[in-house]
Length: 120
Image 1 (cartoon, rainbow, N blue to C red):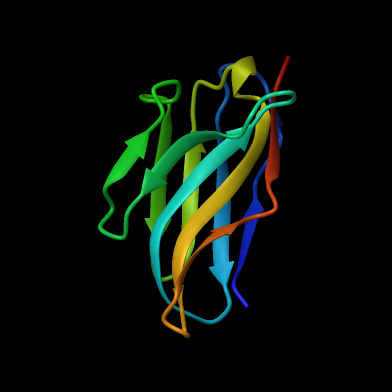
Image 2 (tube, rainbow, N blue to C red; image 1 turned 120 degrees about the horizontal axis):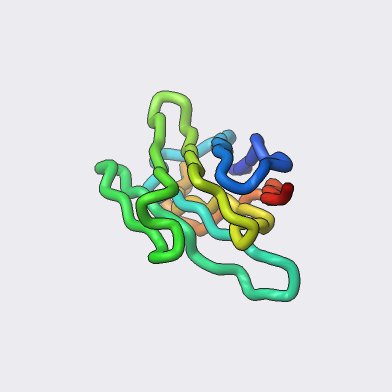
């Protein structure tokens, strides 16, 4: 059983910074891509950032230059460093990972989400 567990969500003021984390656990052979998505109230879930196993990263235009995604393969963890936060960044942030299990099948896994609120 593979699990993704996010942490680090909080209430922060506009212009502030926050880092959220997501750790993968369970039985698997390889973690391929890892990424973050977010869903604001009343809106659809949207892509935020993704990082490959080779540390190549891509970002949504709305967060470029403010957010940085990184991963620690030894800890099976992906991070999202968020700087210069804006109220429109308020959302539930979901971790996503493409993981090859011990059965040699590759699946898309999601975490349960962590709430980020940007407000004064």
